[in-house]
Structures are given as structure tokens and as C-alpha cells.
Image 1 (cartoon, rainbow, N blue to C red):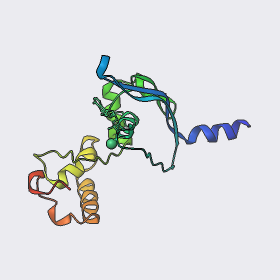
Image 2 (cartoon, rainbow, N blue to C red):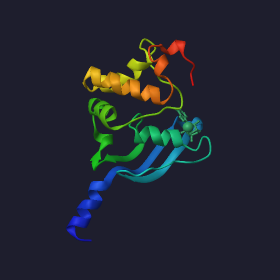
Image 3 (cartoon, rainbow, N blue to C red):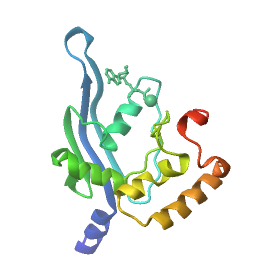
Image 4 (spheres, helix red, strand yellow):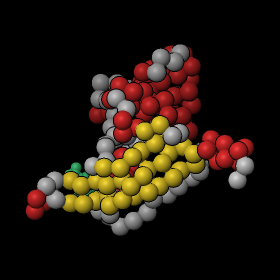
Length: 158
Ligand SMILES: Nc1ncnc2c1ncn2[C@@H]1O[C@H](COP(=O)(O)OP(=O)(O)O)[C@@H](O)[C@H]1O
Ligand SMILES: [Mg+2]
């Protein structure tokens, strides 16, 4: 492989998990969930993680999304080790580079649907007007345009 092939391959590397282990609890109640997971995700790649209920999918996704930390192992974003990154920098990483769709709703109850959708962009300091237009478009796409001013308690969980 010549130098330019090598550089192209390197620049496509997005996220790498190296020898990820995750154990919950200790002693008799210890659960070894991840036991040496290696995963490489390239830019633009679409990946599905499948497995039986309780096999560790959510645990792995939370570690890849930096919402949880591995017991041991490394997580690299474009070559930089996220397991050595401060909480503040990780918050910025999640805000700017990661999109989460949770299995349960994690909406802020004191804000409307529109404000909840705008929230990551507001935290990133983007223009309020642009964010409002974008958020409205997104809510309309999923049929929630008319409910955009409702708060969490006024909508169904689904
Ligand atoms: N915070 C936790 N504390 C203790 N055990 C946990 C915790 N989170 C997950 N587990 C256990 O880890 C295993 C994998 O869970 P999970 O990652 O949620 O699996 P999946 O998403 O594939 O259904 C299960 O046995 C679960 O009970
Ligand atoms: Mg799960």
C-alpha cells in the first residue's frame, strides 16, 4: 500500500473500539457484558448491531456514543482516544458529532417539542431563527408539526 492509499484509508476511519470490556457489579452479582469487542466504523458506513435481548447492544452503543465508559479498552474518534478525554470535551463531542435516537423518550419536561428539538443546536450556539426553521421542518416530517408547542406531559410517550 503506498502513502496516498494509506492516507485515504486513515481519513475514512471514524470510530474504533479496541478490546472493549464492560462489567457491571461485583462479586456474585457481576455481569460480564462486553468481553473484548473490536469494532471499526468508516465515514459514511451504515451499521446495524443485532443480538438477543440482554446480549449487550445498548451497553455497546452507549460506550460508542460516550454516554458510558468501558471497564477497559480504547475508543478512538478519528484516531483520538476518547477514553482519555475530559467530561467537558466529551460533552462537546456528543453535541457536535453524535446524534442519538433513544429507545425511551428523554425530553426536557419544561420545554416544548420544538424547543427540545432545537436544544442541541442552542447549546452549540447556532442561530435561533435557523434552528427554529430546521426543527419545524423535522417535526413536520414526522407528523408532529401541529404539536410543536406542546410540552412532554401533553404528548404520548411514543
Ligand atoms: N447499569 C447496569 N447495571 C447492571 N447490569 C446492567 C446494566 N446495564 C445493563 N446491564 C446488564 O447487561 C446485560 C446487557 O444489557 P443491554 O446492553 O441492555 O442488552 P441489550 O441492549 O442487548 O438488550 C444485561 O444482562 C443487563 O441486565
Ligand atoms: Mg437494548
